Length: 350
Ligand code: NAD
Ligand code: IPM
Ligand code: MN
Image 1 (cartoon, rainbow, N blue to C red):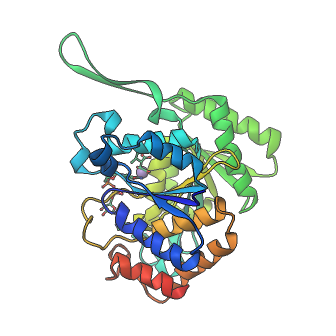
Image 2: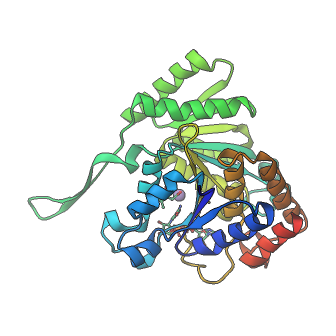
Image 3: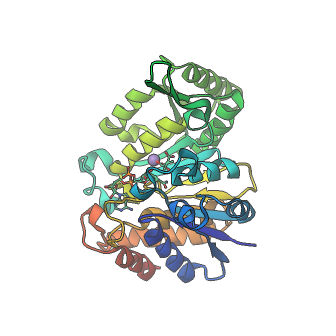
């Protein structure tokens, strides 16, 4: 059985997943690692971003680690064959409905953020993003031509009680092991799904998690509060689209988008999907300067959540912290190290 299926993808994806492979061979050489092309790389080779066999292998592995997909080369491919569609199909196919995106500011990086040190120092937020529903998957969607020849684009936001409940449960459970607070972000002031979201979270809280502090916040205010006073947050639970946006915003509180890992989990016992939250970064791809820490920390989450090796996860997390304390920095966090050199620093700290 494959322990870790690597899907490097496109752009900086292969550059950062290669560092995961190097770290893994140092830390856990016994892991059985396989690799498949994915996204644009798979489209070029197989005519589709996610071949059926790759999805089957992903579901049969213990964990999957994806680099990043997409890029200008595939921007004009039909929507269902675009690299990003492969990623959405992978998430849906693996049924990983809860995406954990931890925004944690490592002490030595408090000055790497564009915000002041005193605002971000000690920051530790867990964003729980709903990942297999909402406007990303709702029907109808498409672009149609109207009788007058003009066009109309349609996306649909849909959520069921069950979808809201299962992702909220993950948030409440996580909060109990942290600072015991959940902020639920939606736009119940304008959206029907927002109204249902608030109703379902409120009911679940009253029924099963009255010991956890629950706060409701409109998503636009949440975006503002994240830069005003981010340390007010512990766990934030939100829908697929708001979670996407709020987590990129939160990444900058930690110093760089290149710092934020993620774990997408589903039913207990099913494999998790681990991915840095950043994209394929076409502007720096091929230069060997991407920050590999988001990918390496995604591997840390895989060790913890899917591979049953919290001991190794702790070791890896400590090694990343030590490397940063020793001054290791890629360009995005104010240094000059290459992708490979940053991974070297982590391996050395191990
Ligand atoms: P992006 O995340 O690729 O890049 C945004 C900015 O952050 C760029 O300036 C980039 O250089 C920088 N950046 C990102 N990761 C970095 C890292 N590890 N180290 C240093 N700097 C880093 O977002 P984008 O430019 O809007 O999107 C580019 C492509 O990536 C698009 O095709 C998009 O669909 C895709 N994308 C994929 C994923 C994914 O695979 N999970 C996520 C986001 C975007
Ligand atoms: C992310 C990305 C993806 C998303 C895209 C590439 C489909 O932005 O993982 O954050 O929107 O979920
Ligand atoms: Mn995103």
